[in-house]
Figure 1 (cartoon, rainbow, N blue to C red):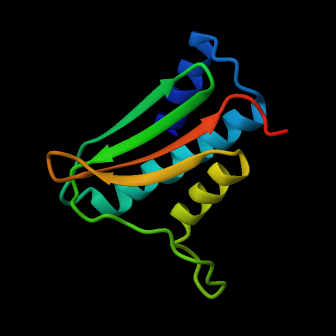
Figure 2 (cartoon, helix red, strand yellow):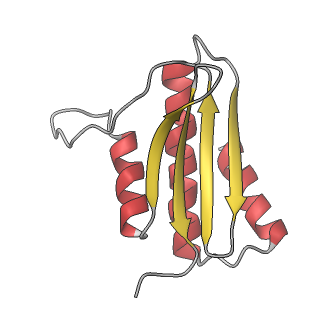
Length: 122
């Protein structure tokens, strides 16, 4: 919740012209990415970074850790109770007309990001 509240407060303070539904989707993405980093990368990477970038037409959030494993989005498996966080992130981004990806960092870790358009899809 700390990361989610910090991102929400930052967007408000900066007066980012994002519709409520976009902000809700973005905050859900932040929750999923931070939760994944805490649950899966904390042993090798006790620190993580959350970055928010705003452009004229887009809003991007990223979470970086120093764990070398590069996760992939799992497909829906109704028999499992977890493991669909990246699938959810991918779908939220896609529905908003945005994109998400996972990249390696120069330090050997990874950054997972999602960019969403500030203007709604026609």
